[in-house]
Length: 469
Image (cartoon, rainbow, N blue to C red):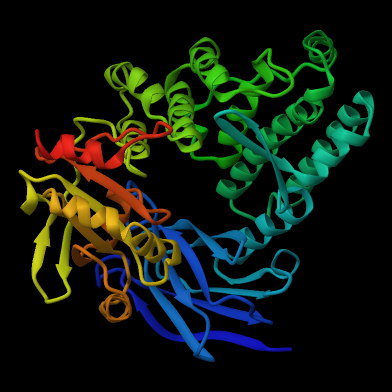
């Protein structure tokens, strides 16, 4: 049995040096991953920031976090995900077997009772293994065990089992009422409530292909969903978000195979009829972002974004939706490109705004991103033609070290201006860099420009049109 103990100091200054440091220890049996990734907030209103801790090459390594407020941190160990509550200035210890994280994860420290309770609840009643269901362009998840029951049980057996499972989970929560914090109890009760509703809807999702619309309606009448009031305050709860998307599936008349170009407009209108407040705008944003993500066609969003923007008081949802239409060579036109600063390989400080008056093709990449490097090679001829017509090729690395950035340039020649992002966390948030490669086109006026994603498009001709404006 190999043992990995994370205990030395890899300093990650999340906030100011005046914040009380929090030491996070890892005890990993049978480590199988090169790093542990996690998401944290620098302030209560800030978007999550991504970071990762190397787990190889150092038998005694560790990390210290300057966390200014109590929060839940989301961790990713390979494909496995888990969360932990962390208190500012107080240490946290996590223990698990890398080959069986879900069944071995335990915690020590001041938040151990809350974390161990949530972990055990997830093991017994959560969705460690899930199955996805799509009502294009939305996707919701249910536990694999529930999906199996929906396909093998009769209608009566399935819904009777759901009632029994809900009662058992509620009893588990009540039994721990005096052992964990009220905040965690309420969060888990929320999760139980909305996971139960999504699980009931799962019956219709699993059996949708074999029922007619009339049969579906009969089952809905026999086993109606409990009444639920929209709760904007619960929008941060993942189970509530998942339920909202499942609920739209439940309310639609569609059966069999669903075409996104047919369902998306209907779902968008249905949202207004069923929901209100921020909940409705949340779902509209999910539909708009889901559509461009699955089709690459921005027309659906561009046709609706003006009204979405005009009547929407929720700036966070507007910003999120704008970012969805800024990736993969598509953008909402007339949206100003955020400030972007970087340092070139020869040490010059530059900014995207330095190139105003020219068309800029921004490519976000990293030394460890194989698809990024492959694309630079594969499209080298096209990129050279773009540069010859006056397009600025700005290749911004999001590597965490200058050494990795420069090392990659020594191995592969990349045409254009190569630079390392100097405010990495801000750049990731502003440009929605949760995955790379990511590409943006910025017009001469400093605003995002639009390139068609239609089949047979002529990218070179579209760039030439922008360059000749």
